[in-house]
Figure (cartoon, rainbow over the protein chains, first blue to last red):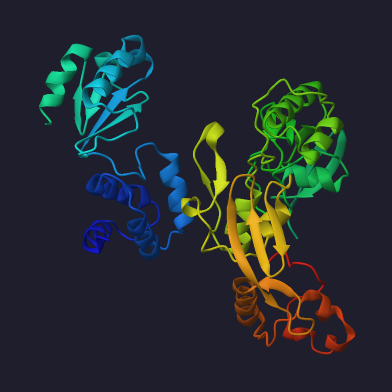
Amino acid sequence: MDIPTVDKILGKFPEVKGNLIGILHEVQNHFHYLPEEELRYISKKTRIPITQIYSIINFYNRFSLKPKGENEICVCLGTACHVKGAEKVLDAISGNLNIQKGESTDDMRFSLEEVRCIGACSLAPAVVINEETYGQVSPKQVTTILKQYE
Amino acid sequence: MATMVNLTINGKEIQAPEGMTVLEAAKREGVFIPTLCYHEALEPEGTCRLCIVEVSGSLRHAIRVSCIQEVKEGLVVETETERIKKNRRLIIELLLGRSPYSKELLDLAARCGVVTSRFRTGEDDACVRCGRCVRVCRDQIGAYALCWVNRGYDRKITTDFERLSEYCIGCGSCAQVCPTGAIKIEDRGDERKIYTWGQVLARFKLEKCKECGRPFAPKKYLDRINEKAYKTKGLELVDYICPECVKKAEHRPTPVKTPFGGGGMPFVV
């Protein structure tokens, strides 16, 4: 268990109600998932019951209890992206990395998720890798885009 | 004395104290409104939607959930209009889609005129997602052993990380408040098991009664009662004595030693 990291994250937040989601975001960003032991530690420190934390994690797609790859690929399948052929982009990425949606590559370099609207409909079909948004992605471009992260 | 407000329920003019819900006011007047998620001992949450009523007068004419709608001066409430009956039947049908064999739900369905449900899910978990168990565990017991997970159709109650709960004290309140019996509690030999349709929530070894030797309650539960009795009344539980033995004559002079008055499981520990 990585207590110093968690303590550092907790230290950034004042001890007031309503900071849990922010804390969980930081932990998720650091570990690329939410490890159970760390969550139990956060529960103890913040005095928020673990059941409530678990409930919140299950509610939001952003949080994951399974380890995710270093580079998180999110393919938008919202209405606009769907109409513009996001499924084909998803298939292309899936084929390129040889993983299905919701999975990570064996070397933990990439993980693939489908997301609903990310609010970038004018860029449809859109793909988000880490913080970077790629617009009007065609299945052909997939290899070039992924190369940047190899 | 709370301020009283005047309102009308099904054409009858009544008075109710401020802060009371429409459902409570209606119940007091003997008006039947079907409910599933409502429980006297719990904070209302308005999840099952069965208690819908039509309001007008001092509020905009609309369908409201009576268990969370407070009474208001000049409120006009109708509980059995055609619109309400139609909506209520649909809600029951939707609930039946998932719990087609729940006796309690079928009884309510019969009472509200629902013969069959148009919805089929192929599932049968009896749980109507009312959240009584989660609320009792959180607000009354303070154990926080149960929680909601997932969203929409996949929503269900479970424990943290969906394993046997460390936080459950084995009081069985969740099973007791469950309107459809989806959570069950079972004592077999000296073991207590609390489980739902797909998961064992917690297991406990039962402590034996010092008088009759019958295993009757988990240690965590007794400890919690002890703690509460000490904090609130300054009482200390000396021996573990089961409710039946407490009721017996020889223990009458010292009932203060144990909070198990009245027998059965105390609802609020």
